[in-house]
Image (cartoon, rainbow, N blue to C red; front, side, top):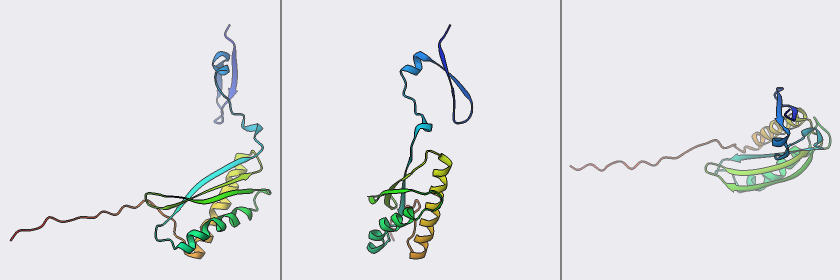
Length: 142
């Protein structure tokens, strides 16, 4: 008969894959991860002051380094990455020293809450999709 491999998906269903198909495909084994890399981008409004733009990477660094829900969270970087369509975008990267997805989400939640708190304390506003429309009305003849 047919040679197959049985795999359990993250959603719980059993996948039956032919070994021929399996040998030509890459497989990610999340149980072998030693840490999780978290990458996120957040945007602030274009009216953000130059002082705040300079301050944001260190504020986010302090928040990530003060995580309490998991020990050993390692901050990698935070940079003012780009001028977006409606926001000044900052990209942040850090590592959670576990392969546990739930623990990584717990860390991300703590980081998000604390960034939200710190930004509110300093009057830094998060951006949301906006668009300005300029309308030039038709001129009337008398």
